[in-house]
Length: 284
Picture: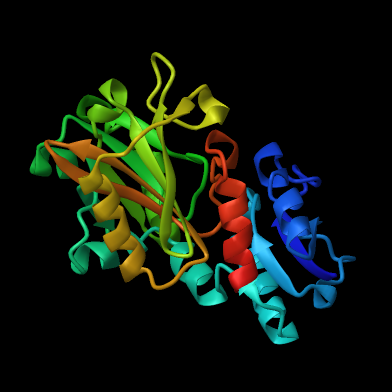
């Protein structure tokens, strides 16, 4: 029986509950799937028929180490999904700029590079945004992500400069529909749409992640949202799995994130989703 290693972090050594749903359908089609902590130096990756990246949710805190690990897997000749090239491309959110250049509608974003002093307050006034989200370009789970009013920009200047000095910072217009309607997450396996959830923040917050009290529900995405997500998937190549996150603003689906490294896939929210992903893994 061929072994598939489901890569996780040391905070989830036995996988998340959602990812464990993959074990029975993979076993049913002839694979022995097991959890493997990506940073564990004692694990024998060469014994794996395939490595599937799952809940490596600390990768952004150890990005250089994580990418060296991916490179070692390549050198060992172990197949990795999503592909190493995709992982490297997706690890810096500047990929959104590339997608926008190819016709994908994204949330309006300012891209500020390292360099001479820039006033965050002046930039927000220039584009006329009353609220904005400041983000690192290498981040996950809303790490160091801040929602600010234009009046608070001077207070955020130090964080803004610290982020900009690394690999550049991104500042996105705050999408008000997140508070009233929610943020869409659409799951794709082998390029095929599987299911969607609508995520909403808790009262008084803007972050939709569970870590901050957000919640999600299975929902039927409008056809134009699915089509917009499919377009983004096509531009990204042929990922084994993908989660497309975005928001509807004035009838347009605007991409917030194209998650191709370690997204939660909400397998437990949709009957048959784990089986679909297992079949996609087997096809690779």
